[in-house]
Length: 68
Length: 402
Image (cartoon, rainbow over all chains, first blue to last red; front, side):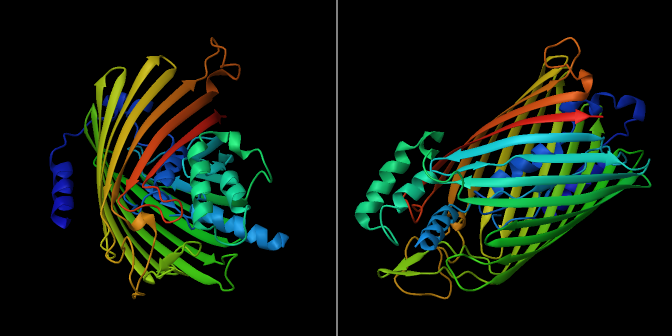
């Protein structure tokens, strides 16, 4: 698994051409933002956390109840 | 007597294992150097499932910049849990239901498909209150956040502190984020005369990368340690006719790695694909795949469709039945092998002075989301004999930026 993660990181680091700030208009569009509504994303993740036995690596940080 | 009934009811509700805790999503977007916008967000959410559980949980979140580089967020959430038809079945007798009553219970559960069964008796069986306060600070080309959460209900108390740091590099094409979460929980089941601690620590990291003007990628990883009481005190393991409390290990180490890729299909649409692999030292593993599509229906209406599939392996000590007491025993369905599928629908409407919903101008946004979820476990759930759970959740949110 470590090798897979390392490979993914290397791909990300090496395979990307630099995108200039003035070229990012499309990336700031709501449909292109990862977790555009953080509260809603977190709510959905937590729905899954308490119904399934595994969690993590979703970008959401949880706490506050014993249901995870 | 009244007290005994209450304890019994709460116990039944808790067997469902449901209580919503706040999750705050600090995964970086590509724009890590920006403070969150000033806004108030109000959400009305509910959840229903075929195990006869209903939850209503309104919440309000307020975010306000205190200076050019500091933003403060406060939030408040209430969980209101009802399992009235379960309670009605349980109230027909004292103590644990007999086999005949189990059949009656099962029939009632199967019959309940909507909120119509929740009209009798007390409106809610359990209520949890949660408050949180946090701040975000600009730091160079990134942000640092610290959040505190305190949660309280009749049999569970939790204090959590969460922090994250994200920083942009390579002309802001790359953003690296790290996170730390620590929870100090206390479990005090109403059906027991003891109190136990549970501590959870999570370290996480993510890297977001702009790959082109149309593609963004993100890899994420997390490492979680849990210690203390890790079982569900309201569950029971029946061995040779005797009901026993579950015994889980006192420690658990969870690891997960995931990747997401978001790309623009057309000027009006985008697609996101994701995969996560999870493994832990209880020998539970899982694979999760997801696909999400977003599209502008008009200049201020976005529709989203998503599908998610999940496959989980069984914990090393989980058994469908036990012949004798072992070092660890459990009936927790979340430790069994199985799979789940989910369909998601989202609708976002941005306010516009020209449409009916835009009376507050373009600062308002309405969010509607619905999901249909199906989970199958290889072993029947211990208290209702069902292998399949069907559920829906619904959320209506109003987001006002000021």
